[in-house]
Amino acid sequence: MDRSTPAADNPWLALRTLTPARIALGRTGTSLPTQAQLDFQFAHAQARDAVHLPFDHAGLRQQLSDAGHDSLLLHSAASDRHEYLQRPDRGRRLAEASAEHLRSHASANPGGVDLAIVIADGLSALAVHRHSLALIKRFDEQAQADGWSRAPVVLVEQGRVAVADEIGELLGARMTVMLIGERPGLSSPDSLGVYFTYAPRVGLNDAARNCISNVRLEGLSYGMAAHRLLYLMREACRRQLSGVKLKDEAEIQRIDGDDSTAKVGNFLLGEE
Image 1 (cartoon, rainbow, N blue to C red):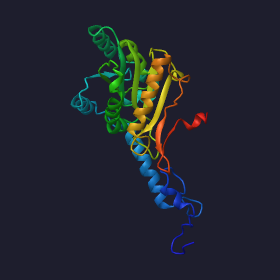
Image 2: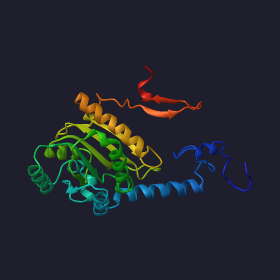
Image 3: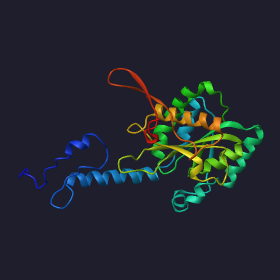
C-alpha cells in the first residue's frame, strides 16, 4: 500500500483497460475512492441528460432529406416528456391527429409497402441524433439489391417500440424497423436499439419482434448491425414470421490468426 494515500492497492486495475464496465473501482477503507465516486456521479448525470434531451426532429429530417429520404413527423399519444415517462402505454400509440395524418398519406399512396423505417426518441434522443442516420446509410448500402419498396422514414416524438406496429398497420407495411434510443446505462448514454417486426399490427407483444441492441461506436458497429438486420429481414420474408421463432444465425466474416477467412454465426446457438 502507498503510504502517501489512504487508497488501497488495486490489483484488478489493469482490467479497466479492457471494458467500460464499472469494475475494479478500488476502495478507501470501506468506501469508494473519490475519483470513482466522481466518475459515477458524472455518468449518472450523462444518463439523466440523455433521457431528458429534446428530440431534434427538425435537424434529423434535414439530414434525412440531404441523404435522399422523405420523412413524416408524428407524435405519440403522450403529450409531453413527463407523461411519456409516467404512462408508457401512451408512448405505444399515435396521437389521433398523427394517426389521421398517416391514414391520409396511406390513402394517397395505396397498395402498401414492403418496409417502413421508424425513428423514435425513446429514452435517449442522444442515441438517435448520433447513430440513426449513419445506420440507415449502412443499411441502404447493403440492401440495394433487395428492391424493397419503402414508405417515407417516420419520426415519432415521445415514441416507444410498439408505436411502430400501429404505423406499419396504417401504412400497410409488410415489415417495420424501429430505431430508438435505449435506456441509458452508466457507461452508455447513447445506445441505439433496432427492433424488427414482420406483419406489424396493433396488439403484438415483444415476442413478435427481433432486437439488435447497443448500436454505437463503443458497441455494435453500424455495418454489423445492418448485416444482422438484413439477415433477419430476408429470413422473415422467406419464413413469414419474426420474433422468438426467428433466430439470428447471420454469418460474419472473421480473419483468423493464420490469415485464413472463416465464417462464424451466433455463438449462443452452438456448433452444428
